[in-house]
Length: 591
Image (cartoon, rainbow, N blue to C red; front, side, top):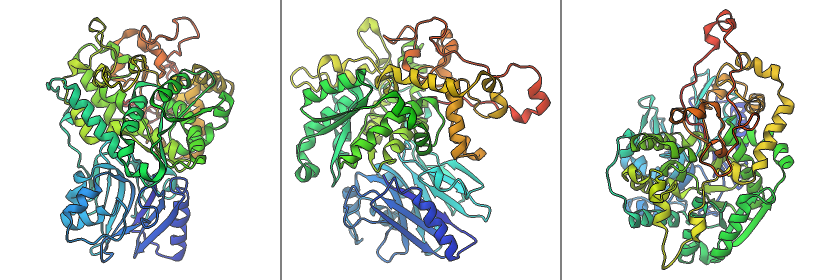
């Protein structure tokens, strides 16, 4: 991952302004410690902090077309850049960077080229001939991007909120699958797949096609000129990624440069479920396995730094980001700069345990669509920022555009959990890789029950976080929570504690609005909470909150299940202060 910052149309073009932009760009240097670049054209600035993965020697940014009239700063990887270059026979490329193709595609096709890109990306492109510019973000929002506005009329874009929050009057999360054009002055969606409408597909399940598409997705992400590995929790998703990568590694350029032994990485509390399962998978696949331990106290000590980097106060995201943040530091110390990870499978295939209660295939499918659409606010944000904090890039094969199209076109009846037919959660992808002749994984791993990452690293991790928060947040603080935090009011002491830390780093109202809210059980959206009446009394995002589904579910006893809290009873105070204090929380995924 790299870090980009673009400031366009500033009123002040002094050297002091240039110095300020360089200073703000430095806030992103953790994302790209390998090189820094800045292009200035009149009142427009494009800055870049580079993490060199492809063409480390000549691919410094910003990048240009032949006569440097088109300038682009990019964070991402374009996996089909070789195929795209083959179409641009009249263009001369200056570097071996996969991202340089963006400048030439713009010359050839104008603003309509974005859907041609196969990869993860966030970029800003400036056409100096007319001072117009565009910004775009990948289909699912794997790469983060924020957009802001200055009081002087300037428009800002940044990979992370911390580089623009101080200088912008207002800023938002740039929506995934969208493009902003200065010519029209607005956002438009360039990504329009069939599943986006949430209409129910009817295509029969084809296990071999699903397997083939996933293998292609993994192998294209082995494009690198630096050492890489796989994040292996021992669960289904990361184990499949590791299995496919290990099978195809010998065919790749990176294997010729760095060897054909796959490296895998796992973290957990001593004795955690993930460590045991990951070790078993690594032994089965014959990988070079690296196992890291952390303590609850070490995780708690890192919380402030984690929240600063991931820029959210969402409870589950912070729970899962902390061990990932600690692991990424260890990975970087080994000289590894890129990892593959298993995010996205649970959203596509309905892998979260609450999907057991989906009443019918229509609601099942609609919930998967909602989950994919909000991935950029949760798992994608976590996977990207927790690794980028230490200059490591995470790639996510399950979120390949072509793979998603195939997977989301399957009749959802096949994805439904049907114990009477022997179908557990994510049966369609498990079955696709259940090869008796040449097994990808041991059977009991292939059919292991879903564990959320924050649970799998060790159940005492979440319990320790709750205990720590209880020591710092009093009952009286919770009583007045809706007055202190009227937007997305924290409903637990843990949530209140994270909110305090977040507001210390990002105090502006625009910052807190980038984080969604709403009730959730075991990572459900607010809508799915309606599937089981008991869940409304057990609103916790841990997988163990799926009462009657998870093997280690919270017992239905006082103090065990984290209950929903109404921080302030309706006693007339809200009306006295004013209705503007109380804002309804829009239904949103709480992963």
